[in-house]
Image 1 (tube, helix red, strand yellow):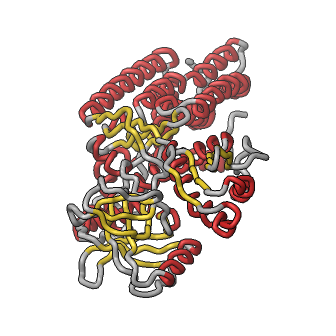
Image 2 (cartoon, one colour):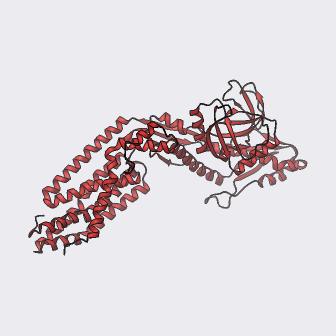
Image 3 (cartoon, helix red, strand yellow):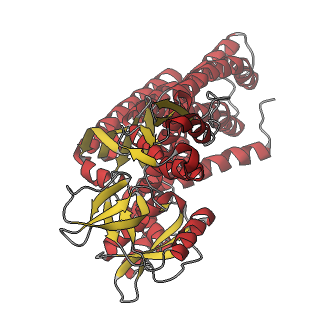
Length: 553
């Protein structure tokens, strides 16, 4: 008998109702987007009357998920950045000098005097005065090496130490360089993602390309320069001992030292030890605040390691100046008045409220481990995106209309049922995209257009099978039942193979290819549901009411 249990009918219509509910916000896109932005701002602490008014334009009890528009539809900024991984090697060598000095000092009777020699950025050269002590010096410095933390570098150490005359040369091993490059890229990706997320942009695309490049696309952003301002600042915070002052940047600084300008006082230069006491990597939090005079500042907190080093240094150097350096500029150089335990403090300077907030965001997101070179930058205007949307609408409408007409002309009333299911299919597709917060791109629109064409395939198979069963003189009810049963395997096989293709495209592809794969994969799932369940419910409900003796399919 041709019948569907009541609970199945309720479940099918319930899914359709939920699909309509979750897809509905896309019909009021601007209003819902304004509501979402205001709610996010209020949650972030900006509880103003304007935001409350903007949040009230959409009822809070209704779903507010939207299909995010990609860069090619919304406009925005596109950057291709190259990470200067060599900067990390130089930082490692600078940080290694105090350790080498400390491990050799107790052996001065054997190695003689210890002096840092100018060298290339990727190596550390240390001269000792006693040639007879070179073997002992090599042994001590090699003791600083640690195992490489990577799968490919198992069994290797991170340092290579050799001697030329009385000079000890320390470099990173090949395995450590590879592991460092990988860590640098992963850290850069994560920090760029955090920085962009901090300013509340929607659905950015941040992907690694090749060994040392990162693709960054942010829809809705005004310009590529604005994006560079967000991510281009290294925000490398260090706390360094002050050796003295210099008249200009060209004055001799001495081996192991550097001369940096003051951020606030033009013409003032500080001579600092290159090896920092504490770095921004040991920060756990940074928030905009105000100093005791009510001026904008940034308060910070170190982790346990940073707090210990910060506390020990301040205890041992009371009365000495201590420089706070941000991106090779001295923000301030206060004199240490007392021991500072607890690992917290405040950064003061001639900040505005906006500058202190931006600095806190950059510090909280973390320092980029290396500088970036921007190889490619583009600003895509929203008018270009609107042209893409309009073209996509026309393509979808034309495809939709052609399919509707074809189905009605070919299958009559049964074609009408298939057309209803097709409309619901598109609604369900947008509902799922909204629930997932997926991004719709121009290739994604192509996936929707393809879904429209594929959505009726299952119905065509069923209807043609029903025609075949009617030719065997079976009754209408039995013909409909057998039509669905015998067409099921062909429908499942065809859609599974296409779905597997969509999954492969998503896993192996990037950017636009993934956008196409997402809409195609979701469209396949919703198409199978509407063809096998919704269309069947419509046919059964019609059949139960009319009880026709014959079928015109």
